Length: 288
Image (tube, rainbow, N blue to C red; front, side):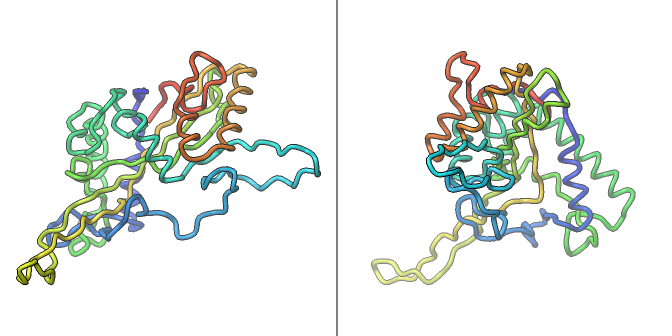
């Protein structure tokens, strides 16, 4: 699944940040501006999630709910359009959909951006982003990465090689509606990642007491948060003939009725060479 070409998705995110919508700082005296104590993958989640069907196991299928079927009529399966369940997404990452593996096409790629930044793929992205940021700064001298010293916030490119920073999977999107734009494919499957970090806070919190009665410092918890940058991969679903697309739609409908480990197994198992293979297993190389 190595990307065919680089788009300016990261650069666009940086320009959004420069408009004052969001930003982050690298200055040690300030610390990351978005830092907070997060538990697990909860950071950056919307305060109110849209309702989702119970059958989808906590991920939205999108669109209006169908009318109730007449009594005695079996319910019609609804396709899975958007997967956002954190537990399922974590399992998908562990199964090979982590950012590094998708970006480089190599299994077991490093997760930390400090290591991944040494790959040719991420290094090329960082170069494009750095140049875009320099252009913004030349055009706007008031722009920069520090809250204290700049009126207009910019994304700090050093996050892309920071220790403890990584892109985590936050969404899988069924875009079969993209079929009209590429007749050779049955639309796209999109993987959406959000930049995040986890870092140990310096020092400790005093107040704990040892068995001997002495006061000791306890380790401070790690600071974790998400940052204002997303990246997505557009993976083509090949074989754009009508029969293949119909079977793929049926596979998405089957996925909509599954949840938890059953959904993970279905989305990642190739089911041999069957044309009824699950949606993600049937994707091919796409674009960044």
